[in-house]
Structures are given as C-alpha cells and as structure tokens.
Image (cartoon, rainbow, N blue to C red; front, side):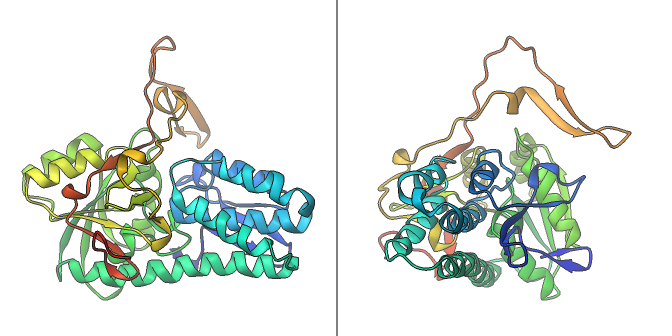
Length: 341
C-alpha cells in the first residue's frame, strides 16, 4: 500500500542482504523506518515486542524467521526454533499456521532456497487473500458515502498488504467511492490512533479519530452505518477473538441494528478450536495501560506515566465476540457460513 508515492509491504524478505525486514510499527506515525536482521531471535523478538503485529503479518514474518533459522541454524530448527516462534504470541492462530507450514516443508530436508521461497510465497498468499477478501467486503458496503467504524488496526500493516477490515474500504476508495471511517483509538496501545488513521490518510480516505468510549454514542446518533473489524482467531462455531473492545462494539451494534462485519483470511480460521471460550487470551504487561508514549514538542519520543505506580492493572489484549453478535464473516472465499468447510 501507499506511503506518499511509494508502495510498501509490512514484512518482506530482502534478497540483497538475505535478511528478514519489517516496518517498525511501534514508532509510527511519527517515524517511518524499516529494520531487518539475519538473526532469527531478532525476528521472534519483533513479534513479542509488537514491532510486527496483526495476525496475518505475524504469520508472514514467522514464516520468514523460520526460513532464516533454517538457513543459519538448521541444527536447532526442530528442537528450538519452532518452539521459540510458537511461544511469541498465544492468540493469533496465523502464527501457528505459518509454523506448521514451515515445519511440514522442513521435514523433507529442502534447501535453504526452497524454504525461503516458501516463506515468501506464504506472505504472497496472504496478500492475494486480503485483496480478494476486500472485493467481497466492498460488495457489502453501500455505494457512495459509507460511514464505517473500525477498531484497532486491521490494515495493511497488520496483514502484509491491503489489510483485512480496511481492504474493502481501500477497494471502495480506489473504485471512486467516498467511504468515511470512524477510527477507534484502541486503548491501551492506540493501534487505531497511531496506525489505522495514518494508513487511511496516506491513502487519502476521509476519517476521524475518536475515543473508544465514543463509539456507542455515535451509533445512537445514527452516524455509523456498519462496523468492520479484523480477527486474530475464528473458532469453528464462528466465535471471533479480536482486539479487546470488539465484544463491546458488537453489543452496541446489535442494540442499534447496525451490521457488524468480520474480515479474516482462511489462515485465521481455527477448525481445531470448537468455540470462543477455548481461545487463549493473551494478558500483557500493565505498563501498556499505565504508561503512554508519543512525541513531544521537540519531536523526541517520550514515555509518560499516567497512573499511580501502586495500582494493579488488568490488561487482556483480546476479547471474544460470539457468532450471534456478528452479521457476517468474510474471507477470501466470500461469506463464511457456520458448519461449512
């Protein structure tokens, strides 16, 4: 997708340096930088520290990191590196899907070139799926102005390219329509404020940033036509794990008769997980809630404590929205139906 006049992907393999490279998402929107490494441990830490985040991007960078591990430390691939990457984040099933794909290929003892080609193709598959998903999603959105509310960052930064929830919005805009997006800031890490709003503005799409707590009120005012979000895992019964706050949005949307759409590629569907209650929910460090980071007037990055150091913190990173609260789940294959393969 576009940054200025140039096209980028969130994660990719650099053939010239034989390294994994990624956009450092923690510095956005103030600083755009691409970092890279030939050390698979750096790639694993990039997932853990949320330099790379978003379920499809996590899966894609994990595949690349494992290809790198096969190239530089093949002797520990099965006993160490597969487990190392699987430990990085517990909720996004794309991570485990990518690890399974790379493990299955590695059993046949391929060359490093074959492993790298498969990892690159894994990311290409995600991009193609996101593009097709956006075409299906755009068909659900009205022609002309469409007031869409989204939560967290389900954009191209989270999904290698195109995004999941944003893919349909981008398709509408590039077809000459005029979607308008309400962007939830998404506490505590502010992925909406820092990432989604930045993405949309780079694409020239009209949007407005709002506090998460304003969403239900905007629905009550008749200023929201639909809610579109991504997913980190879709259980077999259609329950969806996504960034915390999604469940509350589904309740508000249902109460106001507003459609709630989930956009997720097939790699996000977990057929081995029967229901949402079985999805592991990641609890993250309390500093994400008590400390804010940003840029001061001198354009220096600062970390500012906003709560007393003595307070206990509850910081679940995700919640689960029951299928009954969802109007439709859209993948690259179109509308998903519960019970379908």
